[in-house]
Length: 244
Image 1 (tube, rainbow, N blue to C red):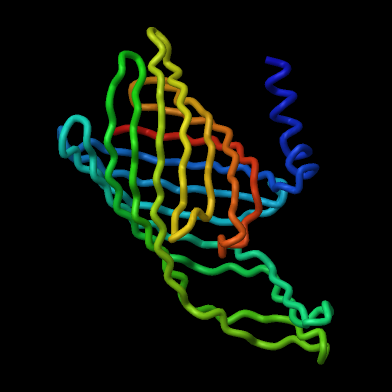
Image 2: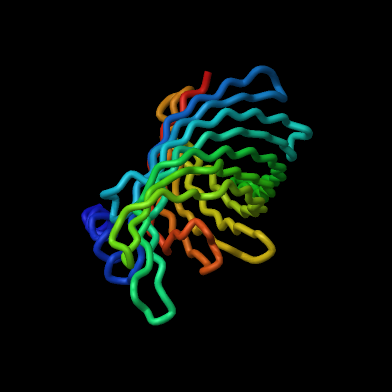
């Protein structure tokens, strides 16, 4: 146990040494099973970055899922994102600084449709989730500093929409007579090319019938084509879900 705690404590240092970021993601959610097929849910999430020193975004999500077959589930969700966009510096062709735009907050709207198929293999469960995700960023007026003229000026960040196909392969294990169920998954973000890959290892802890705590470690490998300007990241996550 001491070794595990030491590794967790050293993650920010390891991320910095390798040129990667470190962040903590926390969430609070609730689900309600309406009948044998329909389930609805709410979730709020907070993420940070910059070795967990800077809040990167807040989100609120509403979702619904429908069990088509015991092994097949469809779901839909809407998420409102208040995003802390990273600062950006542009340069002249000679390498000198041109403009600097500080970080700024802006809203994003996201809708998604998912289809998840699963199969039970004894105590193991294997699932594949395919999710189409569309995110729209409204136009935003911000300020930037012009190094040539040495003044601040208003600039407009144009509105933009983005489609992503997210493919997640997950394996879970139900430990007999144990309230902790470990899981692992790999998720690919595809927009005509692989923009990022997430590797996750975690566990669900069923405190009681209605209370579930989820903890995980995640490594996010980002392709240079990802326009969110995110670096590779080591992430620790902690979530709580109440089931009505």
